[in-house]
Length: 476
Ligand SMILES: [Fe+2]
Image (cartoon, rainbow, N blue to C red; front, side):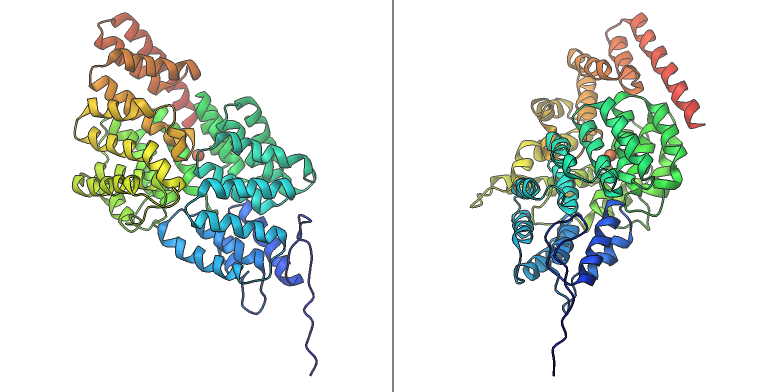
């Protein structure tokens, strides 16, 4: 009997070395294209990549990455299984580099995983999967510089006419925005979205530029005009809806923001995915800081977080948002238990300190303690926890917009503890960057009023009212 020979390919669609059958590599290429679009079919496509009778190392790597990028503790086991399958296959140099990045991540060395993908991309700058996963890792560890530069290093090597390069420009736009290059970020992002209207990450990058510059009316119009491109049918809908809800809060449309929360951010049918639930915590907490009644939403959200709260330390950015939900729900003992676990994580002495341990020690633990102190009315303690870390909050991951709830908590507690000079400074700092900030101007008015400067307080209130009216008109 003669053994049949399976046709093989030696390079993928990016032109990089890959091991596998012609059919397997074609499936891999298709899965990469789906991931760039956050298309829901990517999950099934990736599951189908690593079949026993058609071993495809990059398929196993893709499976591991997909589990890891969920940041959910229960998904780590799936990533470990795929990594073991990957390690058992004969690998070329590029696949070996991916295996090393995955092993580092599984060891809790998120930073090392990111550096390994940096090195890989120096050698194979057109590796789209490495760019995409590396970008997400940079986001998870709050590395704004590398969100921008990882893409900048590779772009000149990419085919300018490829649709994939359009998506990579979407990644670049977000990196530019997180690094404060708002004009360039907007122009690159709009170009990316113009090339690929279903580039939901590129849309998101543009949305961030409007958020950070206080161009709320433009942001509302931008999202509304493109709702059919991002509002459903992709794995990134929750987060973009969350951004629209933030805009609406600035426009004073609390009921509409809550309607978005109920329909799109979190409800009884929502999947228990940390990356989505943390948007829920972040939206409700903004309302808590404004003393808005959020009904039973915290209670439901806190119950959803239960399945993600593990004894095993993994990603403190999620733990922090679970603490927010527990505190908002009044489940103080449960919040305290999570915080005590975080403290134990910091005090433990592993052979090699992991990235998450450093993130917990530096930001996650004090930020979580501050949230608990806030709901207990201990505003001096909030200031004591947050003031020393306010310039390094990026180190526990996420975006400026996501981490803003930490800065807002500090500002609110500064006001409530009577530290008006500090509150004024924090608000002035914000307004100096976005002079249309309704939140900032209303805060300034409160501080001025508390100091007895009623004329100046009135002027700040009027400015806030005018901006809010303009934003509200965009929402109508
Ligand atoms: Fe965002």
